[in-house]
Length: 289
Image (cartoon, rainbow, N blue to C red; front, side, top):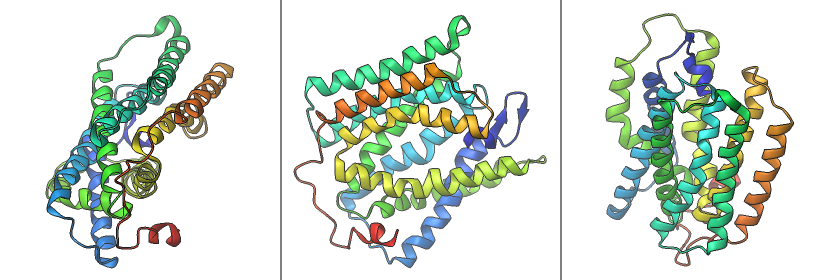
């Protein structure tokens, strides 16, 4: 959907900076409404550093680097680079929660990431070459891992939907003026606006409700490995939305990666032993859905 919003290298649509900051601004305004409607309590003083870390990673780092990179590489190339994110998230989660998963977990996690990289080499064949935008994508993975680990930690004591909402609201003094400054000066297609609307409402906002809740319930280290499937799910969607193709090689590697995810999760660390549910009805989001 980000690729749909920014267009292709030969047919650009929305600017990458506008997509990255604009989607955070839209989600931030929606967050204001949700926090007011649910009468969310203010986070404690110790929560704000983690909220700031989420804002730095999920609101600015990951969207900004990804949106700019997608103006220079195709969706398939970018989705393969996202294969680094699960390993980075597991490492960040182990550091934040002070956990030490067994060597078997790291072996399966590394194997899954290696298979994604191997798939990239085989699929692109002789034409494979590192692109300057790959540095941006790797930076996005690092910031995303930080945001996921911090969000999983906070969601163990705050309602999951409030975690991302506070980070988005904290960012509004930057995202709103920046969005106004980067507003497109030329005509943009309806498809690009549709892609922008999706990443603003779902990728930047609603998707985090379930994701942070899942990280808190299952443990950031173990749940992180589900992200290994994201490149293949992204490619599947790209075949339907962007006209890309999917072949037997992609299907085979997807199934192999799925096997490493299932095996690795058996050894991954679960939620920290000191995890406790927030007193303000943490299950209301689940019930409301």
